[in-house]
Image 1 (cartoon, rainbow, N blue to C red):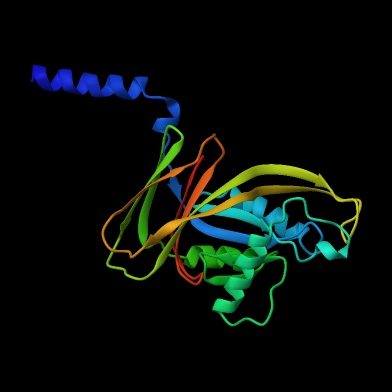
Image 2: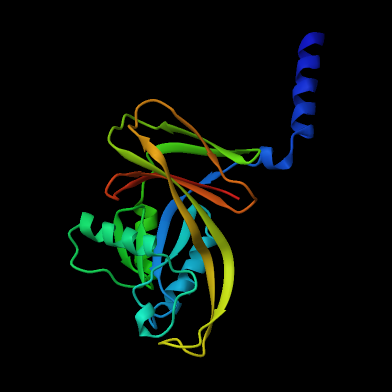
Length: 233
C-alpha cells in the first residue's frame, strides 16, 4: 500500500509539473466549412451565422475564403486558391454544375446555403462520428490518435488546419464597399498529413509550433464524408 501511495504521489507530481501546453486536451465536433468571400454581398449573414456556430459545443466551424470573386474589384485579404480548389473538388465529387458563395458543407457531405441556420442546424444534428480522435500538444508537435468506433475501411485523408479566431476588415471596394465586417475562425493553413486505411489505431505526430488553434480532420477521399474532426486550442 505504501508503495502504491508513492507511485500515485509521483504521478500526481508529474502532472503538476508538466508544461500547461502538454496537459491540453482536444474536443471533437461536427465539421462545418463555410466557403465565403469578402467580395460577396450575400456572404455577411453567413459570416455572422458561422460566428454563432463557432460558439456551439460539438461544432467545429471554419471559414475558407475563396478567390473567385476578387475580379469584382476587391481582393479578399484571407482568400487562398487552395480553398477555391477544395470547393471545386467538393462540387466535382457530387457532379455539381457550379460553386457559389456562401456555401456551407457539413461533415463533408451535406451542402447548405451559407445563411440558412435552420438547415445547417438540422444537418449538424444528423451528422455522425465514426472515429474517436484525440490531439495532444508535445513540445512543438501535435500527437494524433484515432480509433474506429466500429469496423470501417477505405482511403481516408488526414489533414491538419490552422485558423485565426477573429479579425475585422473594412471593405473598400466591390459589392461590400464601405462595410466593416467581423470574420471568425478564418483558415490560414491547410496541410495534408497522410492517408489512413481505417484499420486499427492511427498514431501520428505533426509539427504545429505556436499556440494557434489546431484542427485535425479525417475524411474519406473525394473529398467526402468526414468521419472525425477535433480541435485543440
